[in-house]
Amino acid sequence: MIAWRRDLHANPELGNREFRTGKLVAEHLRKLGFDDVKENVAYTGVVGVLKGAKPGPCVALRADMDGLPVIEETDVPFKSVVRTIWNGAEAGVMHACGHDTHVAILMGVAEMLSQMRDDIHGTVKFIFQPAEEMPPIGEEGGAKLMIEQGCMQNPKVEAIFGLHITSKMHTNTIGYRVGPLMASADQFRIFIRGNQTHGAQPWSGVDPIVVGSQVVLGLQTIVSRKMNLTEEPSVVTVGSFQAGNRSNIIPDEAKMEGTIRTFDEKHREEIHQFVEKITTMIAESGGAKAHVHIAKGYPVTVNDESLTNWAVPVLRRIATEASVGVCPKTCGAEDFAFYQQEVPGVFFFIGCTPRDQDCKHAPSNHSPRFYVDESGLKVGVKSLAALALDWLDANAKNA
Image (cartoon, rainbow, N blue to C red; front, side):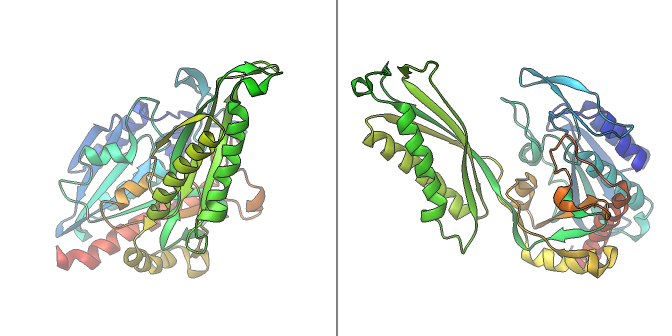
């Protein structure tokens, strides 16, 4: 498993371009004698079906395969030196979020369970998914496209489990949470149209920079004054503001982009409405016009309450009770959420920071210095395998 992981780490591929990774996975599943192996699902995804000898329902396990456009700065001997073109620009490629470990772990689970067919009540579906970190601009991809292309059908999946490596926890520890775990992620773009004029005569035009600045401040009142923070947290961030090209020219237009993060779908819709309303009204009050575009991204990652409560004792049996605990919510987003909209699902975290290091100072996921303690991969294999087998055993009578 470590050999697979290091090979994948040295040869990372970006979203919808995981050709080598997908081929490696498919060959592995076929060698194990899987009943069905489908390639090129959602471009480069692989779906493998392993049928047990005993009748029962179908459970799914998922691993994401893509790397990130990041230049690696670690000193491991299997460091990535891959370069490619991403969205029209040259970029480095690195498994800076641990997806290489996710693939290796699920390959390990496949090998383990393929030797246990006689004991399996039902079917285990292995979903190796591309483009969790988003596909290239202009392309579809990820979990949503996998679902559209039938990965949850034939046989029909009734529950799904997934995990994610994190540097915010020590090796061999597991973090879970009932209900909302990871935030939804939406992008907004705002265009403020003013009236260009000389910087020495601002009264002769409409300054979109001033109006835009007031919009930025106005958007910060959404979370602080409009949302009930005792229910769920939320974030509205403007990350880009562009306007003008000379010190003495008031431009025609200002542009800004930002992100919206929520843990509740109702709050999500409310914030969208507030962004539109506040932006439009501030612009009108300053004599400008505003156009707001909000693009929905990943929904809230919500762990099914009943399934999570069932899963916790299984995880504690695998990792010890002291090593399994409730983790904080994270404003990061995950397209595993799309699977959870189809069937009950549980997503959990596994730590990858050595115990002699302080997690507070460990390079985070998406960092060029992100580091994985590989001794924790075994807990990942055991936890996913146990969840699949135990769930099938518990639900075989209902099949």
